[in-house]
Length: 220
Image 1 (tube, rainbow, N blue to C red):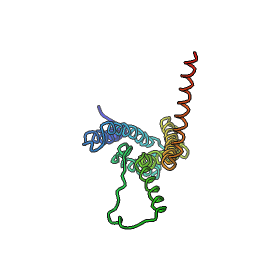
Image 2: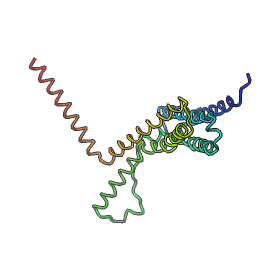
Image 3: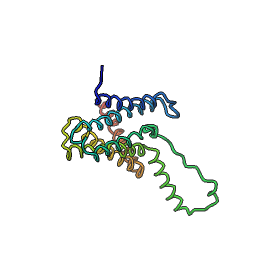
Image 4: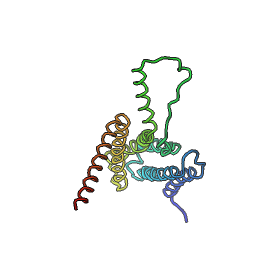
């Protein structure tokens, strides 16, 4: 069965991304667990589907004749493929430990400055050990550039494809969720006392409700 040129292009695109995902599956998993590896492969599948739809914009006649838009799509596609070399899920939950520098052990630092420096270092280490790097990678290498290109295609080039509009809304929604996630992570690590107070308040309210229910049961 003979395939057209467009079918060959789509087949090569899908094969290229599938080889990356299957190759990562067959490679040694390294220090990450099997659960993290399976989660990483699922993330790769969702990223690949988004990338395939981005290349489908080439099927629009008003896009393919514009060389600037063509080069922009190819550049963003090439840029997004670099994220497959990064373990997005493996960075989550990693514990960092601050080790003293033997060369600086003899240096004496004032107590208040030492407390301030240690607090800042602890916050930075906690942020780097959280999902923050993974979220930044996903935003800068996938959702933000894809959203910009799709908005340009829909608004400027009048692309009315349902899949393009759907993935544009999807990228916008994911950007909002990622920004909210960034804010929540930063607030948890910068002001942990507030989170602890909220947890203590919720535990106290649950304890009071349970005590009240026991008292009502005894009265009955």
